[in-house]
Image (cartoon, rainbow, N blue to C red; front, top):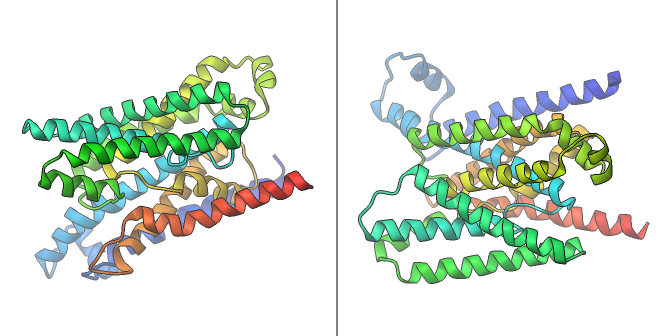
Length: 341
């Protein structure tokens, strides 16, 4: 690695790290009740606070929410990067391919089924249901990929699968009780509100293990990016690698949907923005950078969702679509221009 590339990578990670700390602090400070940074330091160091309410807002609402956005935003961007690598398609992502919709459908079914029987829905139940739904949708996409040669048609097929899953979800919600409908409606639009430290512990454990396993695949993924023949000659077991990508991307997508509902465009936009920043597609750099980039992107969008029309809170997908959709259009336009050249 030459000196210029090392400097670029170091600069990129410094920018991502600084940006993450900056937007994280903004998410904690800004809200209906503004909390000054000195007050936050005072509360975190265990000193007496002027108002108990401020302490409760910080520890019970803003800190767990910001931590959840950081974890789930990074997981969503990494899931998008894995799917783009797997399908070799720049606009592949959990939301576009219908994987998020499949996970959403499964969670909705489990929530309504258990709620009708007065059974408490745990975080593990939601993650398991979302994982099953994500794998089901991913399975249909993989079956179509064997029969469809064009990647553009495959993406359209993924969108259709997403619509089918959303239609089933809407049908199920029709038969839910009024109280359940309100909860499902808010969750199905995508939101990080209501996060607790218990949620953060579960998602942190699942995402940390999954990201670590994905990082172990850095070298095989790098070979896979150069083509199946090259990867096979390099000793990569393509069957196990593909299975790993499917399982890990589905697990990351499931964790997001289980806690925050479907969140659009982050899985597509963040990896491409990070790729432009780094100037490389090498997995050993892209995996941590995608996680950081997704966290920064989601923290920024969640801050806007909470504050732009306060006290009304926007759906997180509404804000991510505003910033993510132009990136997707730019990718498609650039791809078309490359073909013409």
